[in-house]
Length: 289
Image (cartoon, rainbow, N blue to C red):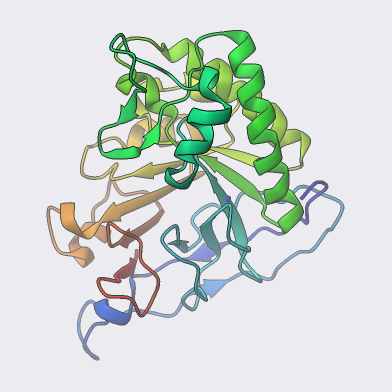
C-alpha cells in the first residue's frame, strides 16, 4: 500500500488478460495478448514514480504471486510487498480494522465517533468497522500519530505508496463529520506518507473533485467501480492517468471483455471478485484490461 525509495517507472501496454477462473478459449476474439514492458530504470536514491497504465492486481483478500505482466500490486499493510513490481500498501485511515474493534473501544475510545444514542457509529456495509472521529484538530493529530506507525511500517517493509481507505466516512457519520474534517485529516496523513518517502492515494470519493489533490495532497487515486457509476472522468480530470480502477464481477453491466472495451474506462483497470480472495480460493476472479 521506503524512505528515499527506489526509482522505477513501469510503462505497461496492457491488453485483456485472464487468469484462473476467467481464462478464455484459445483462438477466441477475446484471447489475452502478451504484455509489453519497458526496461526498468533503477535509482535507489529517488522516490519511485507512479506507473501510469500498468497492469494491476488488487490483493486485499490475500497475497499471492502476481499474474504475469502485472506491474502494480495493492496489498494490505499486514502483508509483504511483491518482488519486482510497484507496491501499494492499503491503510484503513478513516475507520478501524475489524480485529481492532475492542482495542479502540477500550484504549482509544475518545477517538471513536459516537452517535446521539451513545453507540459507536459504524459502517453499515462493514459493521465491524468503527468510524473514527476527525472533527477536531486535536483528534486528527492523535489519529495521525496512530497511522504514522502503520504508514512508516509500510515504508520500512518496502512498499512504494499507500492507499488510504474510507475517505468518505463523513457520509456515514450521521452528520457529525464534514468533508473539511476528513480532508484536513487526509492532509495530515499525506505529510506522514511524503515524509516517509511514499506517494499517497485517494480511495474513491469522486464527489470531492479537485479538493482531494488541492487540500489533501493526494498523488494518485484508486477508484472502485467508476465505470459502473460513470465517475472515471472525474478522477482523471484531477489525477490524469495516475488512477487505478477496480470493477467487480457482481456489478458488471456487461461481460468482462466488453467492460474492458469501453472507451471511458481507465487505462489501468482490473476486474476482480468482490471478496478479493487469493488465487486458488473459491470465487477467485481476475481479468486484466
